[in-house]
Image (cartoon, rainbow, N blue to C red; front, side):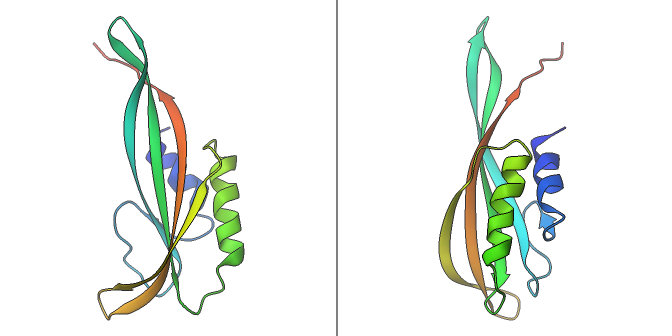
Length: 118
């Protein structure tokens, strides 16, 4: 299963998950991105990739987010990712409609084996 699918499966029971941009800003939701780094070389090729993942949680300002924030970390961990760091980036204005949202970033990692096809 791809890393994208693992993230989506882990979080979709909590709130909508979209890869790049949220379409509904009136409810809590997630977006995510990641970088990869090669690891453990064998025969001049990396055997694993280390994924440095950022999951972004956006919540309406008046939404009580404490339980969702807790559940986010636990869901990622239960899905096999490292325990996430949480960064509260504060309030952000989002278009359309100039909606103000709370933005939290969860940083975690995982490692996946690279399967080279010939």
